[in-house]
Structures are given as C-alpha cells and as structure tokens.
Picture 1 (cartoon, rainbow, N blue to C red):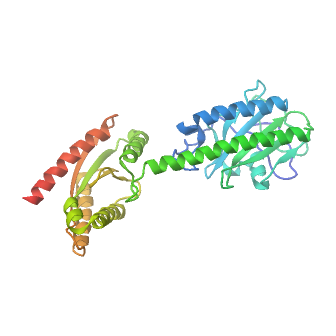
Picture 2 (cartoon, rainbow, N blue to C red):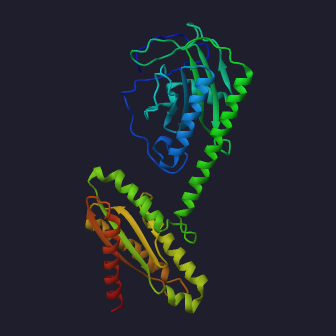
Length: 351
C-alpha cells in the first residue's frame, strides 16, 4: 500500500490506489468472463469505444478522474481511465486485491448508483499514489452488468471538490451505461460463437480449429518452463466398415465412445480434439518416454476392454511425436510426425 493522506471512514474504507510498482502475477487469459478485457484481442475495439465514453463522461462532469473497473475472482482491474491531465490513475493492468475495499467495491455491494457529493476530511480513508497530494471529496459510481445481470464492474467518477451534479446529467450517464452494457452483450455473444466455432458438435471435443488455437496458446504460455510437449494422433479403426455394416448411428456412437475414453484417461489440462472424420489429436506435457508409454497403454487397455462389449469392431491406432522447445510450426510438424507414427502402428496391427 502506498503512503498518502489518511481519513477515517463512516461506512468503510475507500482505497483509490495501491502501489502501481508492486505488480501481482499476470492474470490468466481465457475466453470466459474471468478473463481480463485488457488481455483480450476481441475487446480491442470495444475498449476504444469505452475510452471515448469515459472521456466524454469526465468532460461532461468536469471531473479529473473517470474510470471503468472490471471485477473477477482475482480482484479488480482498471480497464479504461479518462485521458485527463489531472488523472493520476492509468489502465496499466494492475490488479487490486478483493480486500482492497475500493470505492467500486462499495458500488457493487450496493448494486445501484452511489453518489457521495461531499466527503470531508473526517469521512474517508483514501490512499493516493506517491507524489500525488490532492484529496478526493466527491465519488460517483454506477454498476455495469453482463446481459444476464451478473456484475461486470463499475463506472466511477471522482473529483477533488464537492459536487452537486444535476439529475439530468446523472440520467445521461446512465444512458452511457446502457451503451457499455450493449458492448458487453456483444462480447458475450462473440465468446459464445467463438467457443462454438472451436467445438466438434458430435463429440463435444475441440475441433481442428480449436486444437490449433488453444494448442498454440498453451505452448506460448508455457514455453518458458522448458517442458517437453507430446502430440498424440489417434485414428478410430474401421469407421467406414462400422458405418456401412452397422449404420451411421453406430459410427457416431463409436466416435463419441472414443472421445469419452480420451477425456477419462487424459488430464483436464490436455488439449483433446477431433480433427477429422475418424481422427483425434491430443497436446500434452510429457516429461519422459516411460510415462508416455503408460498413458498410451492405459488408453489402449480401455479401448480394448470397451470393444469387448460393443456390437461392432471397436479399436484405435495411436501414434505420437515429441519435440522439445517451441516454434510457430510446432503443432503442424508434431501432428504430421504423430500421423506417420500412427500409420506405422496401424500397419503393424493389421499385419
């Protein structure tokens, strides 16, 4: 926490800023609502619109500070901050802890507009950045919500002097809120569409697009750990025979059964995908060959055991490749090598 002017609080502590140099761990990126918008490529255009909105709000109210704050399970983050000369706060990716008791936290607790026109020296505890000696006496906050009503964060406006905003201005800001929440709806829909575009509708696994998208993200995030990556290439044997002799419903059942086996036998962190008609792929961290062989044996054991109770021939061929290090063509090359290894295994099994 930074040193600053301290004022006692009547309804809790309001912390406006903590040490911007004591950074927390980078927040994890993903495609759900836990992801920080500052880390999302899909939110770049939206954040640009929000920047214009918060600038207009700050100008409309002649306020030195306007911010949009996002909340998730990791804490609070400034995603947009007004570009006013007197604003000491920047959207630099800093994550405030939940127990920081920010003013925006109070707004979220209230669940509606909170306007403190005049906070005197004896009313609030405020921690300001190093070298910033001006006090804040006016606080305005409004909650932001996802389309289903779940809280996203807040829009907050702060001023050094007491204020008395006209009600018409406050209603106008609430109209700005509806614009921001419309963008949240678009983002929510985009994430849903993006998720659907990466899923195989039959098995529920990732499809080829999802395999490469998430696989490359996983590799980029963990390459610094100097881990050895392995790609499995799994081919469901005799799918055409199953379809021709037992019907396409049986073929679909076989594909879904193999998908379930892979999910049961592999770790949640592994990227599992159906990349073609009868082809599956897995990206996993594997430190040594004995462990890899054990994983493959466990998969094959379950496939063989399951095959004994199926009404049609049920088996699969598995190939693998392992490449240490990382390059932009890792997945394509590893998948090609694993495919060749799978073909050799299939040939040996048939012979």
